[in-house]
Image 1 (cartoon, rainbow over the protein chains, first blue to last red):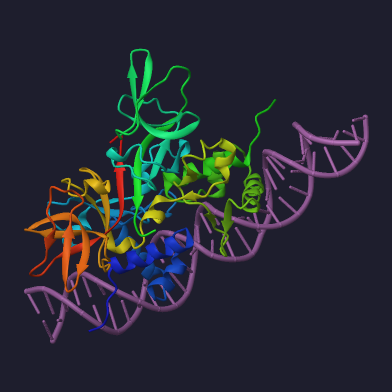
Image 2 (spheres, rainbow over the protein chains, first blue to last red; image 1 turned 45 degrees about the vertical axis):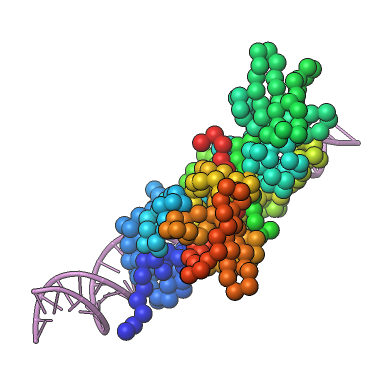
Length: 195
Length: 195
DNA sequence: ACAACTATAGAACGCTTGTTCTATATTGCG
DNA sequence: CGCAATATAGAACAAGCGTTCTATAGTTGT
């Protein structure tokens, strides 16, 4: 039994190359990558990859990867049970960058200190994605300056004034009398274990 | 005052192109991108970008982006105050994919249902990154099959047996008598607002 | 067994790429 | 002003690219 080249194997090799080198390999490089001695063989396989919806070629004939480089398969609900490897292949692969960040140019990451939003499930040490410039709506979590210190709070408009409330009974709500500095709206929370 | 081309502006345009087209632009395409009529002008600016550490060229002369495409600046602690735009430029730009996912091939995303880990700050509707195959340590959060249903639990070894505990007093701890199916270890939690 | 298909090799080719050279406006500075 | 530095244009060029063609083993199906 001779070992055969498979589409999946080739896809993985190309993906690895892309990850390592920051660009797609040329046909010549793919000759080494696949262990063949002719560019026409590479073309043969590339056409298969294109037909299989794994790669595409743009107007210039350049190879473009169709899936994000380091995405994760999204496998639905926990209760639906543990995904079988076969199922997993069919799921959408999602890049966390694209999924979480709407406006990359006006967003940034901030590490949370304090427990003012503990009942919202935002703990000390968590990271939040802050989006600048967005108009906060009622119930949004914002980063705001309170008593000269920046903290996270729920945002609520009450008539003409603004109320900032913590998700923690230990912190009293704050009614803005003078001006109020809102740094941005929280668009996502991230907690990483295994730091 | 005539508007001038700046490195930062060019970098942004190239970045946009890369995001949209999945590859770096050719010199000819950059002529349009920059609004110039000669490839030598493009070369002129590309050399500046390379000198400025924004791009690099590999052995084949191909342009490689040095920063991740859609990363976010990490700007430290909330209490340190709100970052000034000037500061922000200097921070590390982090790709969430690279930051959160250690082993892309053996990880996947799962949507949480139920409130068994509510005191750990994991709420219904959150997404967790599950890493298969990793050996769980005491205190790790794992996805496990309990009474034919998959849920999140703390993992703890107690002598020879294993105890699964919820982060919610409503759920009693479970001592594994027979076999125990652990689907994987939770390596990160993600909550997205503005769905 | 023989045809049909799959997989590989090698060579030839046109075309676009990135590079380099010369020439010329435009801007900055003392 | 006048000189140097900066920024743009256009043309020429070799190299490498992806493509295509022909030929030939190896594998599969009936």
